[in-house]
Image (cartoon, rainbow, N blue to C red):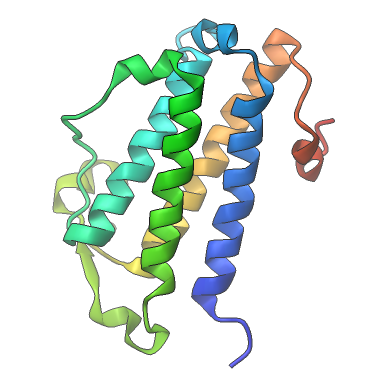
Length: 169
């Protein structure tokens, strides 16, 4: 078999993770408290939210149930650049480890119950495969890359070098 679908999707997810991490690495910690776009939250909130959603998907891969109603949201992370970086890396590494362990021939044997998250995913997504989990994580990260691009433009912060992929440097 050539490159597996999971390998391709994991590499794609890692690419977007690199953009997210480079954005956080490139800003001074004081910018974590800046809210450059009205009603959109601070830089810190953006990164903490990305982490929270990664944790939701990791929990889904581990437990078999996707639930976006986290009770362990730690708002103090919004002002802690180093911990945000460490946790973003750690959670994505674990997601990639789990997904890499799947046998692609049996991917449809493992379903994630999305009943608690149907409000956000829609009625057609009451059950999703691990493949769809990786796709949804990537879509979520791309959405936040767009928001971060607006934040960067609004504050006139220079884009990290990796953002050349979007033509933004």
